[in-house]
Length: 319
Image 1 (cartoon, rainbow, N blue to C red):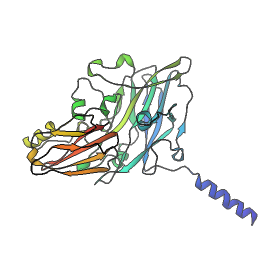
Image 2: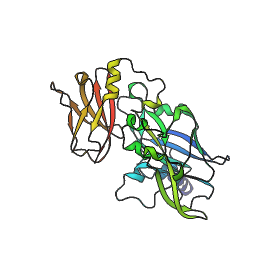
Image 3: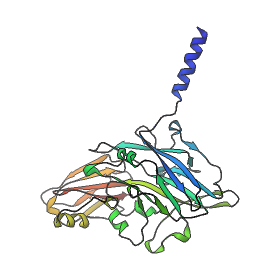
């Protein structure tokens, strides 16, 4: 009997600490110019936290970066949004799992941004993914399309996507267009676009503390630039898409919307960065295009303009 009880306790302890498998899981591969390869498993799950998920198999590595080629991952929320900042960051190897929420009116989940800090002597670095089919779990179908891409430019988080991609030499790579090759480091940053890099001051073996540059993996349901099938059907729709402007942005009080075709607008909706509805505002007969946002906590949001021709979405920052 004692042996049986001991066995049951051992089984209970094992099952309670067993590593969990996230709902979405694939592998990102990183290869430098001479063929050195590093890889990190990337996952999302509805039960994962914004920072630190060792129960999903995350392993933190705070040792110095390898002098030749090394890749570490970190949750973007931890890198940018925590107050006070986490120091040192939880640099993760082998597997990183981000938190996720169900996307409104779509059979998929939305996950937060992830950062990959890459030290590479031999550049450029090429990033590829193991299984594009797996992205159907987080890239949503129909009118809720989301598009996954990589970029070394932090300006994406502060400028509406249409404006960002209209800048000369802006750098990003769409997941569905295949491997993304990028140069990282101060001498490669295109100064004319005002690119803001992701940087990390960290120790490199044999070199001491130096700047390590990052690439962000992000998903955006307004990023039509990654949709090769997207076609604007009418002249009115063309005007609506290209004419929507919200200002001031960033904003702390009253936000104004300017666009062509205000007579086609039915309502506004505000979603947080995870796709959760925060506020719905019907448009009155006077077509008042002002929106009050002081009640929102600081962060990144999406304004969805519901029109006769379908929704138009713009990103804004509440400060």
